[in-house]
Length: 287
Image (cartoon, rainbow, N blue to C red; front, side, top):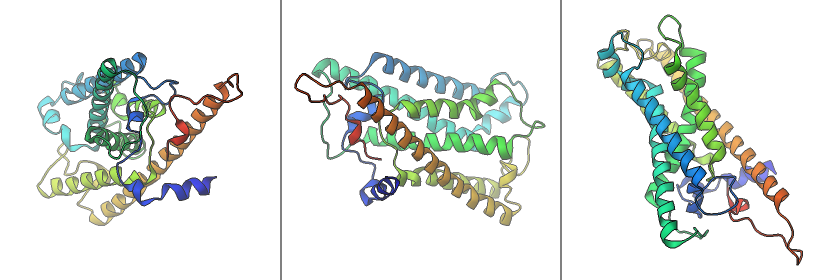
């Protein structure tokens, strides 16, 4: 079975940001009907409000009064903040998409699953951002606590935990709820994002940029004064992104398997002996 899934995942068309059932991008994996649920809509806006609020607090450095101007100006040089920006944008976009779908349902009735030749551009953007956000959140959390965190320079306060721990917690919760698939071949999106940041860190160093503490690098492990060491770290970091992406894909398979099992368990035969189909055809969700 694993080999079958593996072979199926490596189809050339799976490199594209296309899916034959776009309606799954505004539905919850665990709902039984195909219309937008108010509870899921509420969750979406709460999640969006959470990410926006934390991002604003991060930019303003809420609760930290020292060197405010320096912290504000240099907010954008950190990978944590790049990743959190992606999380925030996808959360707001998801809330907007599901709201638009609810308005459409009020006018046209329940959303019907249908084959579609092309996904709307907004759905494609959301899919790319969501894929990158999950992988980057998990990667940032692991790297920060394993290789970056230093109590001499980093304050272990609520804002730090929200940016470097709860970012992963909430993205994994979101990943467990969404209905759309997670494709293994889409690993190039978080990979390219990481390449972009590494390129930025090198250019920033060449231009004489410093971190908030006026050190000539953004992160100690990305000190371009030691090019060989930094290149090795960069290559290992890119490989780590692929490992994290693969791990998230396995979580997607687990989510899909649990959904299928629960759907079959709760299906009851009709009087003629046939089994009713669930409103959301989870067995058609390709990996």
